[in-house]
Length: 194
Image 1 (tube, rainbow, N blue to C red):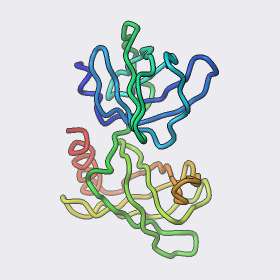
Image 2: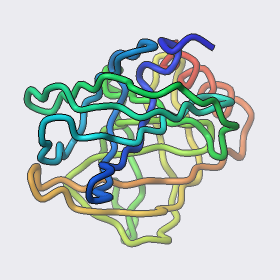
Image 3: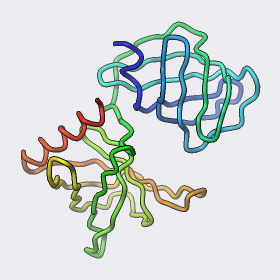
Image 4: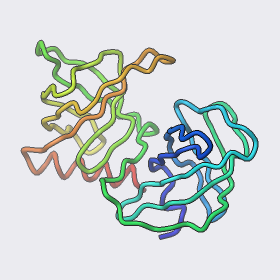
């Protein structure tokens, strides 16, 4: 699979000198270069080496990069190792912010809470919004997509406050009880992956 097929997917990284972990969304990737957008870009020193795992549909890429530059939330690395291909152990998450999809999730008191969809996978979704929810909360979720409404049951797997934006980031596992919604979700997933 060509490296550019990984653009828009999630990458998890570790700075080798101190084991600092961070993650980002792959913006551009070639055999010798990778650029990522990171919510929280750590401080880098010249020639910092970074272990990078890029998540794909059926396989992941492992490589070592050397820090080149940072501009805002965009970090660039020169790949200095051979790239290893390993089997994927989880569903690929794909950045979906460019689609502008919103959703409504039923909160603990039965109220509708609105969130922005930031990433999608075949069985989950990442959301951002002004309201946090407890881990384990289960409720109905509705997405307004170009293909029509998608409804599912969702469970909050994690929820954390981003101190910089003062917004909550939620990770949800979703399950579909009807085939029409599942089909529309897979259509959205394919659209994001394109």
